Image (cartoon, rainbow, N blue to C red):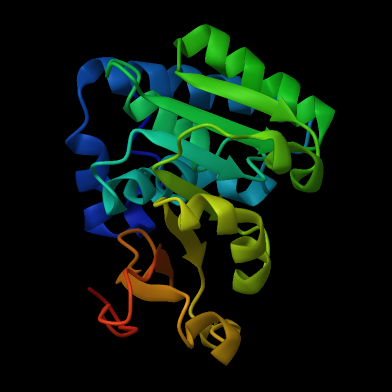
Length: 226
């Protein structure tokens, strides 16, 4: 397997994320990685420079999203692009009954790529090819968690995810170290409980977790970690 690519420059914990995976999951991820490198020649799926560190920068980075809400099996991934993190989540849970990831992506060629990976890996995922504004109003499935990576500011993400979080889903959004100004009073005053987790793949990144408040006695915002 090529999971050691980029090892010289990546955090140790990123490789722990990969090392703990079952062999069949690693096999599926290898298929995914090979397809991505093949399609990248014709479709701009990820930054070309990041291909040399694909297993850490994209795959391990995506695995930690699912780990942040370990009980979640039904996911919605916003702006899936090349499938990070949503398609990695689907592959992680490919052998678990009831697992399903909804991937929403507007670019048709990226949708075709996602469909190709799903066929080749038997990942439990559905591709919704269209803009979020068009797809999400008609999506009434039970969702445990909503993910997004490098898509939009936090207020915009919560606009998309609001109805799912109101119904009990957890938002898990990958952010860089400068996300603090995105936490406006309108987001933190009362509707949401927002916490963060340190990234295991990038020391300056965070995972921002968003839950609905369960009434007036809910916990306070806890920035800086769980």
